[in-house]
Length: 227
Length: 379
Image 1 (spheres, each protein chain N blue to C red):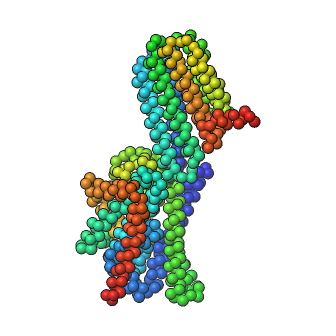
Image 2 (image 1 turned 90 degrees about the vertical axis):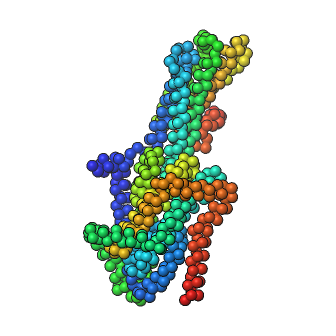
């Protein structure tokens, strides 16, 4: 009886609850990305894709608001406990919400395409980048949820490669003689992939970066390279 | 037993010790007032015989100590020792209800640099003020005219005594009496002090013990329940107003401070997470819950008059809620007034400062001084 009472009293603590919600945000945005890629890149038919994507995005937006609410409530009730974790969550929750937005943007690109994606042409430019971003989703989730510094650093390095390649793709597309529709869509895909990688890395690197340097992992990378 | 469980049990035990000291403090105060003799009692009776002065004493004293539990417990001690009557004490209790709202209003001033936030925060804080002011505006003249509150409370306390209430609570008195007698004997017999000095020292000690104990009880209980409160907060806020009243009541009874309950709501209202409409019932629950301290103190005295005044406080707050909350049009009045003050403070922030200074300090102090002046002239 006493033990049961104590267990009830202790309950789930604040961080366990919000980290759980944040993990759901990452899982859902990853799910959105995979669904959109099926349609956009692999030309697969996904039943009620638009509905599923928008529903997942709404869920992510709601979780963002819920986490913010919980953070404010926590800081009101216990102003000195988990302050840096709260500030960090307020920052990364925005990144997670943006992941959903960019997946939605990719769906819009799929709708913009005048004819189904030419897989061969896509691979010439992107060379399996969608799978790499999908992998980055997994790495970020593990790095953040498990507070794994090694995985966070690995995500950091991974992002660097993706960003460089995205910039290169845009350069190549500018010089290419692709049809306008295809060129615009490819350029947008490259941009959105880059943004997705950047937001994922913002989340992953929050494990290793000090709170005042959140989002500035590229500056830190330059410093590390110079040293 | 793991470390965390041990910590919870330890905090609970400490809170029980401080509660014991708080009750000893109440008993000591009664002893001190009795020791001052008839002349002192007459002076105090004369001062509080004017109900308006008593009301403003309640507001001013509570605003200064920022704890209605302290004021009402002192009043219980005074009534128990026969220094003031129940009738004289009722306006002080009503004043304490107004005075206690100063804390959350002061908390709302912390948002002053962000206008929109401040507008919400000051409105959220003053909805409690306006509710209590309205209750006093209704029940104070009614009490003066009919004495209904005193009659109801007397009946309730008599029933309580008749049903063995005093017998039931006598363990509290039995537990505190040895402590009270030990300190009384120490000052009046063991130490070589004059009669008056020894009782003045007992009074000072009782106030210190009471204040510090209450402060520590609040602190300990807050740390014990805050985690659980946080976990259930959202589900409480999503429910209807009656659940809000109940939540405010339970939390306040546990932490023994309505100021803690109402002040915690202000940053949430300021941030826009909580609306005034949702926060309002919680503050009303806090109003009822805060009466628990004085009831506990009255049980420690075992004195029927002290129990009556503690019940007066409880009934006054219950009546306030039952009169104002269920009727939509009445419920909207304090909310509307608070929002209007919020709008006014949004335009000119100095109005908020002016409001706090005048309602809680300037007006009560001035009116006490004026009535004192008239009493002296009349005398």
